[in-house]
Length: 75
Image (cartoon, rainbow, N blue to C red; front, top):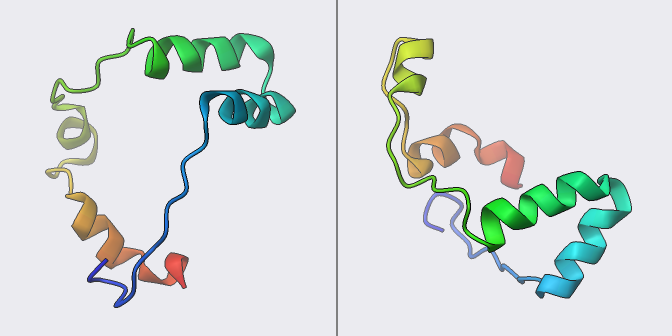
């Protein structure tokens, strides 16, 4: 990532590992809702919503802009 000047490694979990990890701290109905939304595809977040601009009074930032404003969180 260019903002950090170093790479960040990402290691994904299998579905089974994810369920196990979520189940440690999250009630079962929420784990199932997560699965329904993100794994089964019942949640479509591809639609752009004007809510951020309406609530904050300014346009939303890009991910790169957010990272640049929060670099200290990655160190």
